Length: 252
Ligand code: PGA
Picture 1 (cartoon, protein in one colour):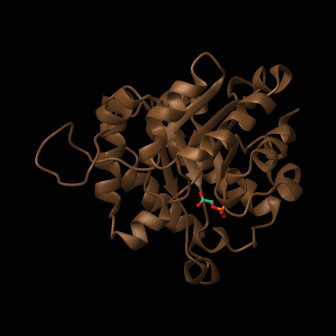
Picture 2: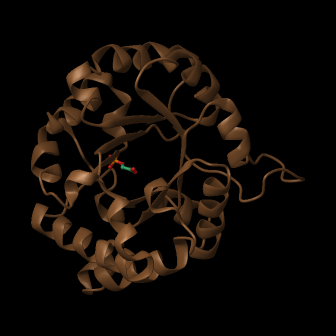
């Protein structure tokens, strides 16, 4: 029942953007035409320093603003960290957790990712939980096994299916220009849906499953065509309004 799920295109700006980048956000807002806004959700996740400014600027428009990470506690002695509640207060409506750059660069475990996802849901926000295999794991034929383990260990048990988003991002496809074949993406997404259904039953139909990794305007329609793909998590290409909007138009 793909029709029950509204596609989501999410831009992950990573550690890019200064206050002057609001001009790029303005171009995204201006180009997110009503026909497109009627069909999909568009989310921009800038660095945390820009969330409040971007949320203010996008107020009253269909463009949503999100964050890239959070701490699992609501407040406390955690120097340098930000809680989901703080991000909500700044205007974020969603938080990405478990991105491979955090799993690898910050040693985040599935258990920590799960705690963060729980925190996002506790704060009433949308949790975008990232999973995906490395090149070596794929070459060894372990793609589905890795997906199963990461889903089991990083998706919270009590997750509200409609506020949970799973982003399938093969680590080897991120920032590399290589992508899996569309049929391989479909197969992994089908597997993820089955795994979610085994935990959440029929309600798993409400969870959106995004593909991420080298999505660009030129490959978006091929990568996003499958009914199993409910949208995209876009890194590099989301920094340019024209590219992000062109990717979004795959849904027109
Ligand atoms: P990319 O990044 O689109 O630059 O490959 C995707 C991501 O890391 O979410």
